[in-house]
Length: 205
Picture 1 (cartoon, rainbow, N blue to C red):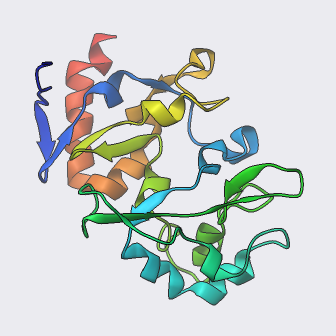
Picture 2: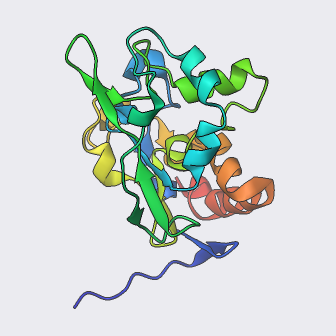
């Protein structure tokens, strides 16, 4: 039996995997370069977050392009599944659809490769991530068994920023994902990790 991995860092009850300080990544998420490939398989969200999206149903439909599915009954998987990394204890996935070119992608990803949820929020004057699922915002960071870590399994599929595309890496996941980490942990949590990163990793390069 393998030993349970220990994590020396913890913020607000969430353990931090130091892999985020060492795993390489591209400068930042850049849709014109990567075409939002990480969105192609849909995403799991807290089952209750579906209600947040549905409150903005018409705004989301208005943000979609002609090729997207505008029937909201086809946006989500039918049954949630148990997952204790979500506040309600249950997760539900977004569906995928096939574009005219035969490419499959999340129902909320348009043919321009941008997220209709984010477009809808910005058009209404909300924060860009107001109605966007948490795990969409976080990638390439994820939470597994209450550990903030790098989504290496998802990254194996990606052609630009994926785990095997080391020629495109310029710095660490932590350095690339400042805005996302602040979203997850708050300014205070980010500042704590930033000090730790510079003391134990950055200044020792």
